[in-house]
Picture 1 (cartoon, rainbow, N blue to C red):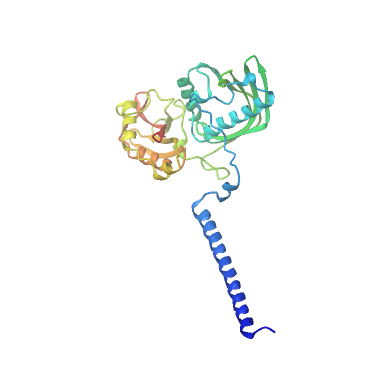
Picture 2 (cartoon, helix red, strand yellow):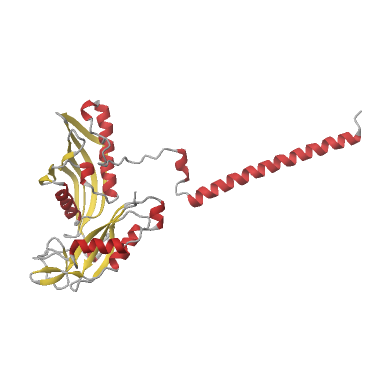
Amino acid sequence: MENPSEIEETDNKSLVQKDRSLLYMGIGLGVVILIMGYLTLFVDDPWKIFRKDDVPEKVVDNGEKALLDESASMSDEQVRTSLTKFIEAFYYDLQRGYFDPPSYFANITETFYNYHNLTHSKLKEIYWKRMSDVYNLKRVWIVSTLKFERSGDRILANYWAKESYFRPSVSEQYSATIQYEMIIDADGKIVSLKEAGVRDEVINKIVPDSTAAVTPDPSLTVTAPEEQNPENKIFDYSVVDVQPEFNGGQKELVKYISSNLRYPANARQNNIQGKVYVAFIIEKDGDITDVKVRQGIGGGCDEEAVRVLKNSPKWKPGVLKGSPVRTYYVQPITFQLAQ
């Protein structure tokens, strides 16, 4: 027969063990709560640690092998995979506001829409002139429509993309599904990019007082010189006789921006780099008004670019038929971290 004192001692040990189990459980729950709290408050996407992000690969001309520079030795399936990544990266960069021709285009691009035999600098100029009449562009290329064939050491690709945007010059909302033809050379560079077909085209005229559709900011409505009285109208910089410019020219503008631009701490911490495209009006007296971001990169860079241009000294205004006019202008501002 057991001693009552021994039974009591055993019961006490059991209670102590139970108490420790509750303690350990409490500590475990506390750790879980702390971890979940940290992920919720300080991590944008807590679940990304459990998956591999599908980020499009960026193609850069940095001496490394490009996605398609060995296409001659690839199988058709390998070409399709690399071609898909190449096009995805191309549109991803455009969406982010990058247009760096050497990254994607041959030294001489044989065809770019309706233009031929372009250098990188000319290609860039034409691209941004086209984009000056495109506001709020949305483009989704349809991967399943991709078709390609080999022609010697080149790849001829066709695919469809859904696009929609507003055209300020004619006050039209445009949407369509567009077929693109892209030719890539043996070095993995685009030598031709043009539209090969259009379907499902919809064009809606936007009137200023319409409530049926979203109307753009009035500062984005640019006008051809022969259509309007220039007194208070806004003209695109490409249609005036004398284009506006910063006092002292491009060299002084670069100097002003570089000496006044402050790299946002958030962008620096998150390694955010790129170009912010800022649209504004150059008034007849040279003042800068209606400064707005056309294409940004986030991280505080958009706001900083707007701040710098809002504080800009007077510009030389655009001139049409001998008189200064209000001119619509887009200025890229580069944010780049020191290597």
